[in-house]
Image (tube, rainbow, N blue to C red):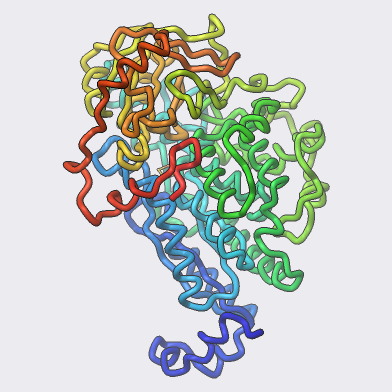
Length: 571
Ligand code: FES
């Protein structure tokens, strides 16, 4: 059987016209799709093009030919809180489709996917699992953190991230910091490009890629650069070279993504993300990736795997440290070594090094062997006991499921009981918060912002930032059928399924109802009888989306196909 790339190598007239040497390409050792969601529009993916060019060069040294396949790269930082926020989650599946299309259309033999901002990180693993082409993921890097001279930020040292800037902006609105201090934050928070710099969604997904075995060790945490004007960071360059070498090893040894992305590897990745305090978006993305890999993971199974795992990485948003601080002490392998030693991981799974996880971790120092540090805690003395960071709940307003984010906190009374204040849009909620209408003891309900109602399930991060910036993070809960950014922290419940726009009972909640969040029993309920909920739902009418969704648009297709958050919003 001939390689797929035979068709590309034989297209002599096309190759010549495109600037290739047909005689040379006939002998190319491998045609490698460089799946690159590049844009110069934002810091998260603006190094992807130069990294793609570097890969072409490095593959050339091995006699291979890299072919770039592009895709849109949506930055949540540019869309959150705006009318275009609904393009973010949608882009995950579009990006995966673009990479599949380009790979097959150009007759690729193998694939290196360059990830980046949240959805490109999630989409990185999907085409690898879907096509099962030899391949791996390479991360363009996270943002180097900054530092400022005033509290409450100065004591974090060189660990100031975009989260601090966002919360600083809300704090300035309420006079908690000055305009000059906000300017100092703005000037210092991110010296260069890279993804949001702590355990937010992009780094959650880079951690998934590494811990599932599809990225080389130490590849999930490097800084993208030194500053905005510098070249890419030396660690990124080194990872690119090592990734090309690894790709050829995978081809030689005939190790494909689905040999690596097994059920046990998913269990490892889920365990690592829980231990590191990852983003709630992980639920959606793990379900979507598992579906592509043919692995039968459900949201209940993710909870079962995660609920025995303590929180041991002291990273933002729950802790003070940035991702690059973890990188400096050895990165994700340090966390995985501690987990493996304590029986939380399967050491026998294959990885893109061509070795097992246990073999990869054999030379990684244990916590005892590291110089004193406060970034990774021992499993026996964790930052928080299992089930205090993220977990899956159900209840009479979330009959399928919803996800709770407590960021390592324990609720004082063991539960949060509050009075509902209901909104049907993020914008209306924001107006009420800014007007000072939200008081301690409130449960903000934001609905009709789910996968269909959004459309596109926008992130409610601007609301959670406002609550934090106003000092309400511990006294006000926010529940929604939308989702959260990894930056979000507080008492938060998202992904309520079924969503309001599809007739989920969150649509029945009214101002003044009592809502009870019970993490121990993993329930979210409104204090109403089933009869009363049913009576209210009889009056429910589906929202008219025609004013927001143009016929033939991406969202028009999306709302016809998308599954609920309970199933990962897969299309
Ligand atoms: Fe791109 Fe956070 S907005 S990584």
